[in-house]
Image 1 (tube, rainbow, N blue to C red):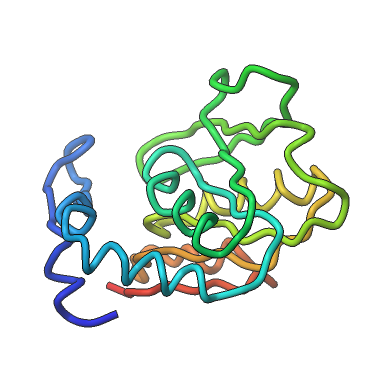
Image 2 (cartoon, rainbow, N blue to C red):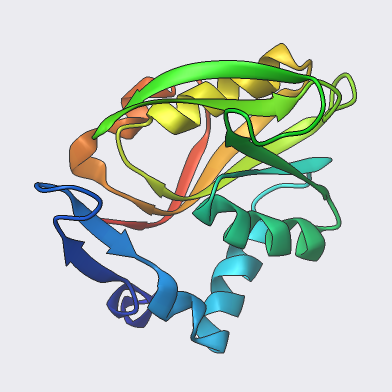
Length: 169
C-alpha cells in the first residue's frame, strides 16, 4: 500500500476509552480508489474456500474480498448475535475481554480459510478466530489485515499462522 492510503486512516485519541488511540478507517472506506486497492490486494493473497470477517469492521473488508476472490463469506460475531448453533471462544483485548462465535456449520471439513480484519492489535481477537475456525474443522491459510499495530506485538499470539498486513504502524 502507498503512503496516500496511510493518510486516509485517522487517529482518534481516547476512543473507545481513555488511553486508547483508535485507528479510524472510515476516510479510507469513503475513497473509492483506495478502498478498491485494499480489497484487490487482500483478495489476491490466497485462493481459499471461505473468507472470515471479524465483527464489525472486518465485515466491511472481508465481504468484498470474498466476492472479489470468488469465495464464500463467514461472519465471526460477538457472542449472542448468531441465530443457529455456534462455537464460542473467549479472549482478551487491549481494553477488556470478550467472546466471539461462529456457526457450527459455517465450514465444510477441510475448507481453506483466510481470516480478514481491519487491524491487528494485541492479537486476541485474531487468535480466538483462528481457534474457532480450526475447531470447526477448517484449515486457516492465514490472517490478513489492513493495518498492524506492530508495537502491540499481536503476531506473537499467532504462532505458525501466516500473517499479512497491508500497512504496519
